[in-house]
Image (cartoon, rainbow, N blue to C red; front, side, top):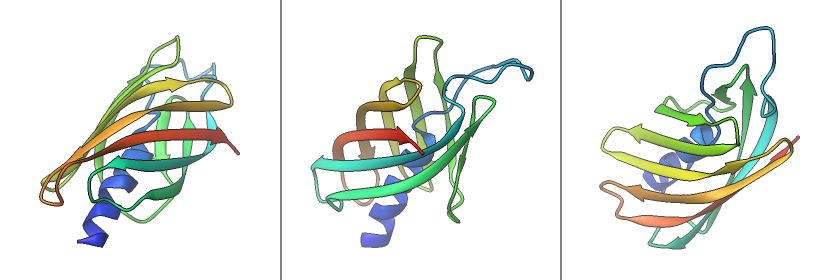
Length: 124
């Protein structure tokens, strides 16, 4: 069960800053390497997770070995909206990503039970 809960958090971390369409000539302000901490405030998921992600030309790449299905956007004002799925488990997150930091909330669901909390990101 612990592994499945970690996978939900990994998917959230991987998808927190997926950007929309960006011109290939002009990099988005969110492009770069990020460290994301996902903190559980409600439910039986582990208390916190930390993961690395890379954003390039508005697209996110999780820097780990877990394959997940995620999609989302970062609006021009930095508003983040993501949906992540791994089998029957998943998480939805919203928040704001600026040039060097970000924060928001998330809610997980699936056979591991419901969990919720917040995420914070910082550029590396």
